[in-house]
Image 1 (tube, rainbow, N blue to C red):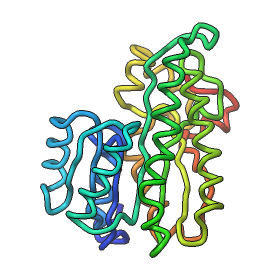
Image 2 (image 1 turned 90 degrees about the vertical axis):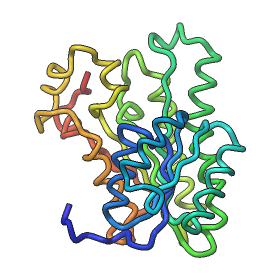
Image 3 (image 1 turned 180 degrees about the vertical axis):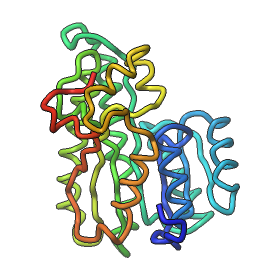
Image 4 (image 1 turned 60 degrees about the vertical axis):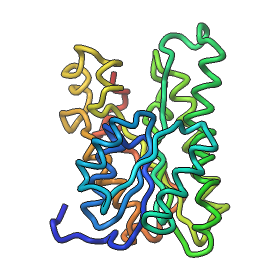
Length: 255
């Protein structure tokens, strides 16, 4: 990134799942480009560390809670609005996968939880900010996954939920146009705790499937999100930008 880039100066962003990994990298990138940022995640201690890393309360505020809790969503938006003003950019980095294994053995309570957080939670965040955005304009960027496009053994229902997020993105883009743009990014394997648990001890093997020769980094995703959040993407809506290191060109999934 050009150190002089301030293309998000004056914008107010809300980033969910922002205490570590992709969410924190996105928040860091948005602050670097001039935005002030609200952070949400489940763990208050990790959020406090994230706020400090972003330069303190002049740059970031945080509210701990769960994405599937409507009260938390209201409280988070209210806190960001009180600190910095109305939300201009919503980054939905919502995603859990509490169950691993074959779909035919998946506990249906776990399946419902995945949908409640990954899909319904994503929609809930948009509903919480959309009315205000519709009055003056805004941007939504959802974090999807390549697993929503390629069957991924062991995390198949997570992929199902992310496929639904891609379609939700397109539907919201039509409904909220022209004032609000809605896009998504779909990363392949990014070096996060989620990926480390899924591919324990196999990271180098998985990376060999990528024409670019490495796994993704959180900052790779953050750069794409910042682009979609900026006016450089002013004529892009309803799209899911695939960030897969070229693995789709190789014709096989990573991992």
